Length: 636
Image (cartoon, rainbow, N blue to C red):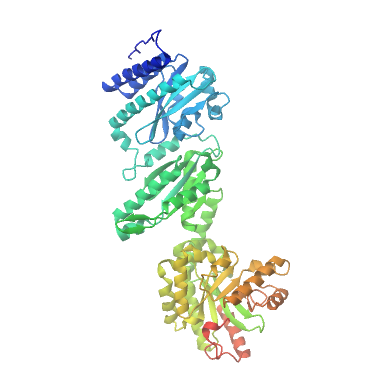
């Protein structure tokens, strides 16, 4: 090892001149080594010895920061081997001593009293035997402003840096930056193995290394958000892989920018990860995830095309007794759950998520078996005129036959969150409803309308515009017999334009549209201005509270007034008692459905009810429509 060249200031030198000589001699000694091709360890060791020679009260340490965010001691001649070994591979972070914090934030960090600094609380067993009482750490940055290392000055007494030390550290940082850049250039091939070639982000190997080096002893001390692009395959298939690569690089750049100071990784394909260590992100992972998803969702231009990236995220924080691999699996479970049930949003892991997913998969398999065995069928709940008691229509509700049991949709609701299964249910229900309507038309007892609920996935790709007319035409059923029922969640699920345009098209074809479960979705009243609907179905939760809660009554009365002004009909759901029905009549609600009148019944019993209604209602024509009435104005 090269020895430091002795330096003794002239007794007559002024402080400014002394300081300048310190700078020049230190710089010249280190640049000489760099110029002769010495390796980084030799250069850093010489630097530390030169510093300690000039600053006897300082112990100097130089560390590298790799692309995965880990610390590696390069030189610290005054430190025992066990101390350097303890630092090696330590993940940087806001509470990882002075060096880890300086590297994480990219700013100098001074711990003027290690004993009382919370950053050092976990490392006092290392510092106390060495009588290290203070530490001043400065990040080494390359020309792009990226942190590549740290220079630390340790002190034996609690204090901060002196003016001379501040000047010397500037020289040290400059020299270390040069030496590290040279070392990086030499190790370029090794470094490439840790970086993704397309995006420049740390890759899956770097991610795995980062996870393995994280401290798992503190619950909530770090976390993970996994992100998947939702539409990469569509972009690749439609516009080609050049456009797909543009989408990936856009997402990577936006993730890295928004994640900072936390670190983003590309795991491959459309998969990304963000390692959470900042206090703000750990305090509110959902808000951090929202910002990440919003950043990705910014349009990207590619050859005169505007691509609209979309992504879904799942995340988890380290829990008591958990390993890094368990956190990764938890975040993966949350991401899978988000992709299956809440695409485009963030889901945070909770202990029951695996059970929830198991129930969902069982529900999907149960519905798939029922479809294969033809055990899914519509049950019909009557809708009555509250003033005359006249049967005006039905709502078709999906039921599953299991032996002697009839299972309601609520028991297999989880299956409907799967787009493929939801589409198959819609197909089967529409086929059965159309067949029942055909029989009722043949008997001359067809109801004015049958309402059927449609999901967000039904509107995807415009399949409803073909499915509904083709199915009804195959059975010879006029379109006006079917009413499309949607919830506000469905209306917003595919975007106002997609769903609203589809609903307008159906209304132009003679179908009516109902807004189901009104009052349980988003800002409901504002949607009435833009949603093309014929009538509103007030949710059962309001009907339940009518007699006990004046606020519920005021809301219902307000909805009735607004509906009248907008020329919409109103149906109250969940009418259970005659008192509720009487109150609804008194405030002007014309229609109701609920167990007071009838539960949902199978097609045979619905046929009997229609025959009875036909016998007592001479106003019905042979096709089941009111004589002299416009089908589009049935409920008005």
